[in-house]
Image 1 (tube, one colour):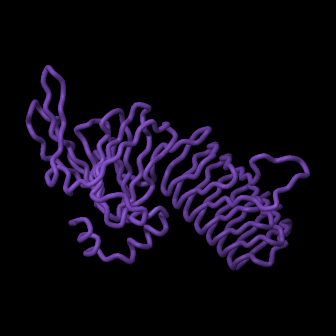
Image 2: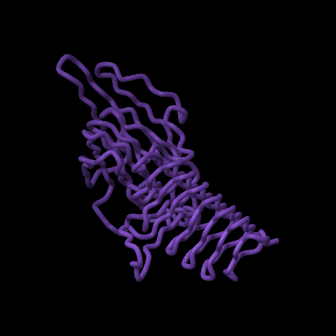
Image 3: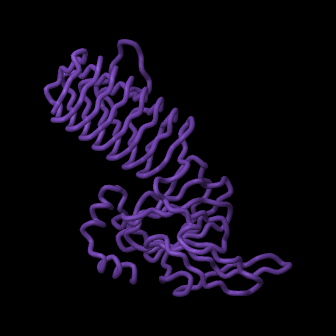
Length: 323
């Protein structure tokens, strides 16, 4: 049953069944509010705002024109949204840039979001964070300006399997730890007084024929790479200098591994979403690919990726990975 507190001013006729609007909230006529929402005291919702189902908006929040809030979002007390990067008194934009909070995301208390950004599915914005760029799905953000500090529900590498001992002299290490559908490898390494050598061989450590390679470097620590999946392409990642973190997501589970040695690599099969972040300034990430570059191979929208995972049979995904 929809219920409005006697002191609430609800001018919109588009408030879904089961939504509660508490004391001194004000909702303008053009706003659209979904079902079973909880809109707490002293909130203000402008006209060009769409709020999905089962959204919680805590006290002291203002939702300005251009904001789109999808289902199951939590917005903490006094979170601040903006819709004009260069505001001037009495000067209004003809159209406000859309700010989108994707399904299941949470915005912490007193966080501030710049206009025109996207907070990805299930992302977690920490209290007091100042978010100036898009947040990937499942990411955890904190700080000013906000940085990615982790990924929600990403299982650390050390709990995915037993860690292998370091390679000794010229001993070859055959160690692979599953990361969902991806795999982390400890690569063979030789070490003597002249230095160290690490290597991998096609169809042994690298489980596909390599047709292309590229290097990722000079990445500022606040930036992230990847954020996509491939339809049929296979990849093998080695951080040949410095360090970075890799998060893999097969649609059912997420895992995170630190690439901090040339003797360690991650195999990423088709239809696995991969993200790289936390690059050190000196990091150089080598990526081996099973095919030549093809823009149509990329799946860059996380929602599209999940939809394709749901419709693809396990057998078809296994067949792609076996190519």
